Image (cartoon, rainbow, N blue to C red):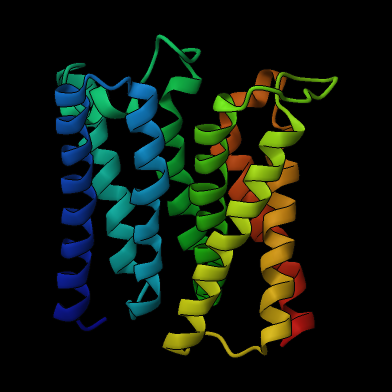
Length: 239
């Protein structure tokens, strides 16, 4: 494979953006005395947007460097110092169980898996990741502030949380498919786009609501993977 300096440069740019964003969030955390929960939500919401750059890469090799690089940097941060800006901003062992605290690591792994499995259908990767980034990120940020919530009988999650999840997941999916259409990596009509966005948001919301009990910590796997599979099955019907 011939090396593409454009792709390498883009990968470096996206990587730098994610690291700088996390660093900026950590600075704000210290200056404003914010909790790790708040900074973790911000990272979940906005760092995940980097997946939209997938539409500009020519080969899976280059975007795959991003989760690999983030995985290495995060692993080194955990191994060398629990007080690094990465671990301080993303890992909240006080609020979460030890396993759930490492959700950002699972997030990185899930993106790598999506890239490898669905590269030939990049809009699926973008949609599934944005459903997780915007949907779950917004729901967990907004829902705790609501005065009244209707909890499900099988967990402490709520109807209001699922509603927030669905709305923002749909908007995230719409952003993903809009860019995919603009860059020409997908060719479907507007009705099909809306249908795929609704499907992705719905499946992602259901998956998040049902990720409870012993698998609760793995919603960064269940949500994007369920969404991706649903879109994969539905895409041939919409083209």
